[in-house]
Amino acid sequence: MLNRLIAVSTLALSCGLMIGLPDGRTEQVGPLMAAKTTSLYDFTMDDIDGKPVNLSQYRGKVLLVVNTASFCGNTPQYTDLETLYEQYHERGFEILAFPANNFGQQEPGTNAEIKGFCLTKYSVTFPLFSKISVKGSDKHPLYQYLTEQSSFPGEVEWNFQKYLVDRSGNIVGRFHHRTKPLAPEVVKEVERVLAAK
Image 1 (cartoon, rainbow, N blue to C red):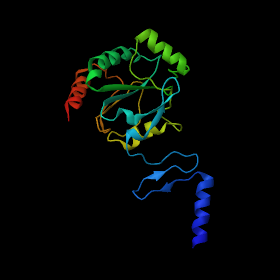
Image 2: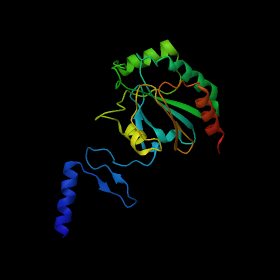
Image 3: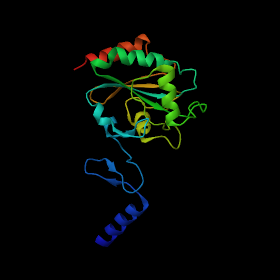
Image 4: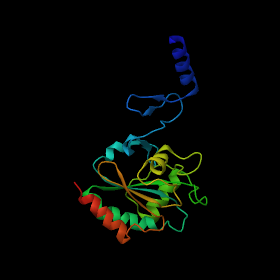
């Protein structure tokens, strides 16, 4: 029995399989990512300059997580996102932008090109992250969590879909890519979540 257990453990390590933890979650063994994530705060993401950012640093903040693109009909939403950010930032509001090239090849550039575009054309001051995939076989684990494990499951449909996150890291809203950041329903929800204790 002991030999069989050792053999299974060795196989798991060599193949990069998951091992179970006592609380029912799984932990990465080898090259694979964890199969089950319990919180947005579990992720460390590279910012637009390639520096790792642990999302737990946003604990206690209200977040709007957005997948963005530079050459989309929705790209002018950057203006409204910046306005929303400036209006509520001092109350503990953050926008986390994740460029993605999943829809119509509308984000083909490098991280440096994306950063330059956002700064020069839209004067963006909210956090920009490195380009990731938000859909498909190479979907980033952050978006696996948002689209498969959050309270609002379902694939991202296009650029500028928005997820609202409360101060405890709960996903409490999702807004369609065509819904502008300053739309009354978005502003109302941001204010409601900011006001909640």
